[in-house]
Image 1 (cartoon, rainbow, N blue to C red):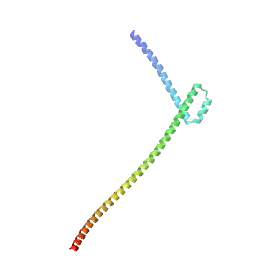
Image 2 (image 1 turned 135 degrees about the vertical axis):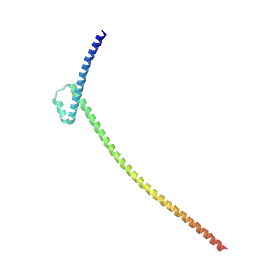
Image 3 (image 1 turned 120 degrees about the vertical axis):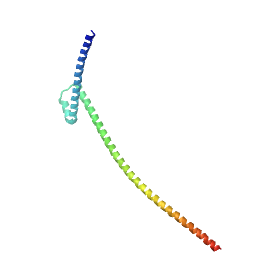
Image 4 (image 1 turned 90 degrees about the horizontal axis):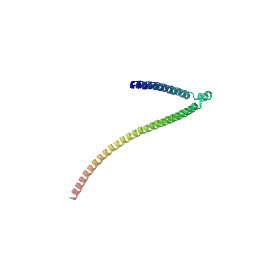
Length: 151
């Protein structure tokens, strides 16, 4: 009895599986058909309006078509917006990169100028110290001469 029940249930599952497979195949076929229609509509937008007026269809099909047309239009609009935003972002990035390169070049020039100024300052510092040494030597000689004169 259990074996018969199992065989009967197995048979029911096989029937269900076949029905489900047929349903899935019909859904896939319908999806492909809709994708092909969408592709044709996208490639020839002028003919879509003529096709809807000349082909007889049910109200539900026309509603679905209208809905899909709205979705396609919305997606195309969103795509264009995304393309525009991407283009603007790329342009802005190019401008910023150019500004960064100019700033780096200017920074490099300023660093070179600072190095030159530091070298000049160091040379002037050495000259100052030399002159101070000479002045000290002259002051010492001056003091000696004054002492000589006083004596």
